[in-house]
Image (cartoon, rainbow, N blue to C red; front, side, top):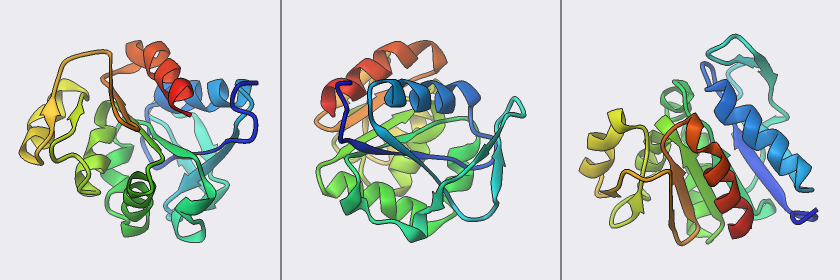
Length: 171
């Protein structure tokens, strides 16, 4: 139970990547962390790309970054929906600025760019959003996991084992 006493956010929105949400959710719980599912508040239930529903525990407007040790942002099309909600973007920025773990996989790099936290940082993502991240000032590299301080990024579901290992080590 290496994460006993740690409290972690996993963001959710419509069209989340099911693997990139549920794998971290259960892996963090298995390690002993308290996992809080945080949505935008736009819905009571969010549906993944494969149709798997997920209920949020709370919304981004109702919590404070100070109460958490880190955040995991899954990909899919959800990050494009997430970044339309200022409270979700602010939560990511607040955690980053507080020196907490901020982990993003696949298209979740969009949230990092919207939170204005990628300039001068090394990171990775799904290749299709490379230009977005480079244009936001990131040093984009093609690796299964990139750790730049407390910022942890991966490219796709195949990278989930390395992604989760890095997150657990950072926490």
